Image 1 (cartoon, one colour):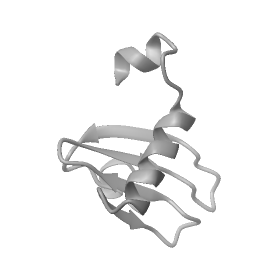
Image 2 (cartoon, one colour):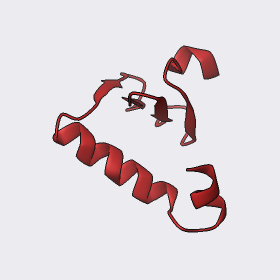
Image 3 (cartoon, rainbow, N blue to C red):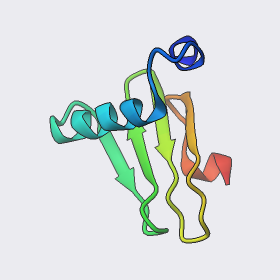
Image 4 (cartoon, rainbow, N blue to C red):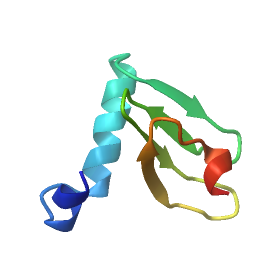
Amino acid sequence: MKEALLENMITMEEIITKANQDERDEKIDTVVYKDGGTTEYHYENYTIIKCHSLEGNRDVYIGNKDLKLSDII
């Protein structure tokens, strides 16, 4: 995924769109926080956290399968 992003083979928006589709298709588990809408997308081998906090954090984090929002804030 890192190489694909660096080589402009995929965009962060495309990754989030795919994660949203995987959630709708019930392929992954998600957690949505009441901080403005931050979402954790839990895959088998990795986690994506798309921040959308009331404070204005709009960052995206990709890490190991155990990554949680509390690990990055």
